[in-house]
Amino acid sequence: MTCRPFAIRLLPVLILFPVAVLAPGCTQNPNPTAERTWQTVFRELPSGLLSVSGTSPQDVYTVGTDSGDGLGPVLMHYNGSEWRRLNTGTTGDLWWITAVPIDGVFYLSGESGMILRFDPQIQSIEPQNTPSTETIFGVWGSASDNIWAVGGLLTDQQFGGTIWHFDGTSWLIQDLSQQFPDGFATVFKIWGRSPNEVYAVGAAGLILRFDGVAWTLVDDGTTRNATLFSVYGNEDTVVAVGGFNSAVIIEQRDDIFMDRATPETIQMNGVFVTTGGVGAAVGRELNVAFWTANGWEVAQDTGLPIDLDFHANWIDSESGLWAAGGVLIGDPINRGTLVYFGPQTVSSVVVEP
Image (cartoon, rainbow, N blue to C red; front, side, top):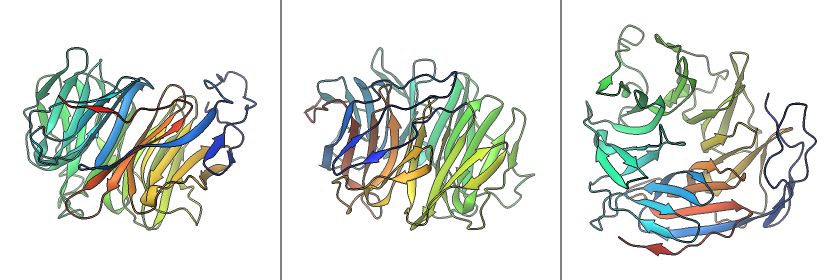
């Protein structure tokens, strides 16, 4: 059962989440009436910020592109009082950090087949031996011996996709040639409900599902053939977002995907939903859409600039929304932006290594 507040009250700059009447068996979200404000934590970093994750409002990570400053692609940690930049010991852009740690470890992925194993307890960053050089845009795993990575070519999004699996020892390319003799679309994100129910989404409306044995193609429930950039879910709903200019927001229930985007919603690049039913999607022009009992409602009067784009988001244990982005179109990806919407006051102080 998904538990969502019945309404969102949108006000200029300040948004209040009213007390929700919950269905039997649902758990009240933390601090349901806390005042939540939009805070621009970073806006003009030299590197674009492409993913954000963590374990609590006082334990947050964000990753991004390599600005060439000698510290490698951005990896920063927030401890509740300040941010600390970590030296990744490599070069190239990072596109993703796992939304939740896998057996206590985060996996970071990016260009040229880069996957980094980051253990926050001992602050170790270990490059993985990977089988190819495509960009890896997303990683998800149920355990340290069952991790999936997806990606492909931006120069051939129709047939340039790749899926890898890690069995605890080696990363191996998955052979999908029987289903796709000419190749399949570039894959941008992956998420699973269990080892036997995993979803991957990508260009041209691609949705793949793994049932524990094989990958199969799933109907996206639309006729738009639009790129899907991100996927996430909880115990009873899977959500995938994307689009081109106008948004695609599809929800899967009872094994059927249906488009839930309203006509005025523009392209969405990232999505995150919690087990308690709190959800948000983020996208172009720093737009945010909240998941409510009435569907996906775009936040108004946030005070955020429209000359930048969000790429990904994460929701912490106090229902605080973190969203990362910058200038995402063109080369270089820069003007790194991180926005927080919640009850905390987030510091912008960065301590270099």
